[in-house]
Image (tube, rainbow, N blue to C red; front, side):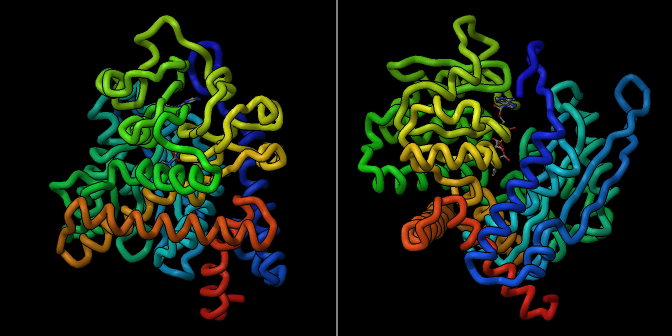
Amino acid sequence: MVAENGTEKTNQEETNNVLKSTQTVIHKALEKLGYPEEVYELLKEPLRMMTVKIPIRMDDGSIKIFTGHRAQHNDAVGPTKGGIRFHPGVTETEVKALSIWMSLKCGIVDLPYGGGKGGIVCDPRDMSFRELERLSRGYVRAISQIVGPTKDIPAPDVFTNSQIMAWMMDEYSRIDEFNSPGFITGKPLVLGGSHGRDSATAKGVTICIREAAKKKGIQIEGARVVVQGFGNAGSYLSKFMHDAGAKVVGISDAYGALYDPNGLDIDYLLDRRDSFGTVTKLFNNTISNKELLELECDILVPAAIENQITKDNAHDIRAKIVVEAANGPTTLEATEILTDRGILLVPDVLASAGGVTVSYFEWVQNNQGYYWSEEEVEEKLEKIMVKSFNSIYDTAQTRRVDMRLAAYMVGVRKMAEASRFRGWI
Ligand code: NAD
């Protein structure tokens, strides 16, 4: 939610609803699959949640105490895995919900992981490079006992990037007294990062868009695309859609949105965006994020933050397909409204799973010390995303449920089975 002064306002109630909605869909998915109530009791919250205080010396000499969280949802399948978010709106509840989504994503794309997630309440846009380094290192020191290459493997998320991953990897390597590239993914290439990791989430979303468009009989060439958010996910996605011949008619960031019915000059915008995905401040003729979401288009991609399509605006969405690159951009009521209106909604836990898939490839390469070409990464990602999309689409058709419930049914099964085999339930 954007406040009038341009800063993001977070709403605790909205975040609570995000967790409750996730629990509701998990419950429904487990019921449909015939699992008993105790499986839901186990999976409705993370197994482990750590909250830490991180004292950091700021550049002006003052000490500021930051709050950080790390949630580990379920490690029955394998170590937990998930990004770290630096954002003023981070809350414990949000981190919990995000860790559950990570478990579902790993289940959907069939990775040997459970879900984890972390976050620090801060605004990196107001911090210097060195303050960010101290905060990144401080966070790793604070959570070092519960993370590690075979325990819980972090990655980038909102407002964190490969530089932050590099500092975190370096700090962990000092604590561990080994070079530990497998501790974290999303690293720079020279530190054991994988080809294709930066663009992996957007690549996965692009594959889902292509598969969904086939189902709806929409040609990508000439299709009108609107993308909310111009950060890692949104900017690469805009570029991929533009290069595939689609017309990206709208993009946005936290401060506003740009619209051109003839298609925006994406290469120019990519050139002008800053490292936080901000670009609209350079223009006067902007529209609001609300107006952006309601533009007439073929494909709408929320790629920013949670709770953007709600019961209040779901009736005004004028897209044929909504593909969720962001985590949790559509509420459950809105999902129902869009589905009833015949809009095909490809849910976050499927659409944005390309990021964790290539993070897994990075971890595998780190563990074996043998690195793959960009083509190998892309080929492997393509296979996994196409298979996952079709398995969920088919589940939705055969079980007569929407794509979100179908995705949860596919995503929760492995975790439930692994917990059972381990004798936990
Ligand atoms: P990012 O920090 O690179 O970019 C975020 C973008 O959203 C920026 O353009 C920012 O200006 C915009 N934004 C922030 N607050 C906003 C608001 N209130 N209204 C409108 N726009 C706003 O983040 P990212 O990595 O691109 O992540 C975006 C979404 O995708 C998040 O939900 C994230 O969890 C999800 N995601 C990211 C990855 C990944 O690998 N990067 C993987 C899976 C899911």
